[in-house]
Image (cartoon, rainbow, N blue to C red):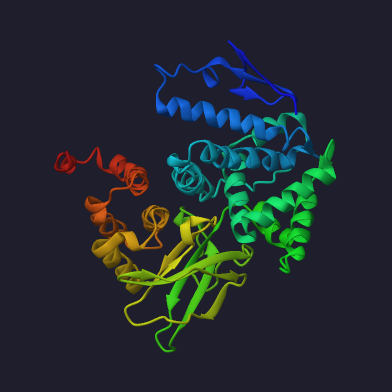
Length: 388
């Protein structure tokens, strides 16, 4: 691979991945180590990694049509974090910053009724510009990250290498990728129809909220249900039992059981129905459940109030039993579930009471972003000075 990087004073985009000659606007590539800040170094690194990634995803293998632009952009955006992680492991880009910079941000947009699927029909030239949006980049990246995690990173990498080898110097559609990844899983003795799973995530807009309820009558049995998450209460069905049955996903739900000093290793449950019963071993009276371990999935998780109370208690007593990314995830999910009416407003506020003990950046970052809309609601009220 022979590649030049060219800095130009003006360019309509931050950068452009021409094959063998990536062009960058000066402020996205030129760096003076004696004066440039860490955040500027980070920005430059991610733009360069993004364009390098396009040499494979976009140039070597090009999407057949504009509706699959999210494939090349989603891959480049995801690998920005993976590649920067490789160069600067101390920044925790892929396991931590991805959550507040990509996942939490795009879920805000994708929870609106005005959202759209990641794969969009493109009928005419004027449609092309609009497919390059945050849904394509950020949701695309989040779905690829979820896929890599439920497949396992080594199998995922093997599948991608096959895909690039088979389709090099040509075009490919999303189904070509799904079929190649399914074959890679088969080779290691796993059987998942990737196309069937990923079609639900890419052809439907929005995402699900999973609700995990402890079954009061049966020991070790929980009820897991899914519905489409929406902020707008007018868009929700009046009778939750009726639900919106047109929206269903096959969800790779990772789950762990914890107590005051220990958390179990994660298990994966594939949730594909509106509501399912599952048996969870080692679920004792004082144990809590945690879903979507390290927030690798593109969905929110809600619990019964008893489990929320146990999680709040755990954060207060010893927050480090729960991983940094799950602490940030609990904060973001709780505030957004409350904002959308799925959870009482006091729960997220009680969760963040533990923050005085928090030494990691990520949960603080998640909390400051979640509190911003509340701040905007209150800043014109007469009692706002209490908070200053």
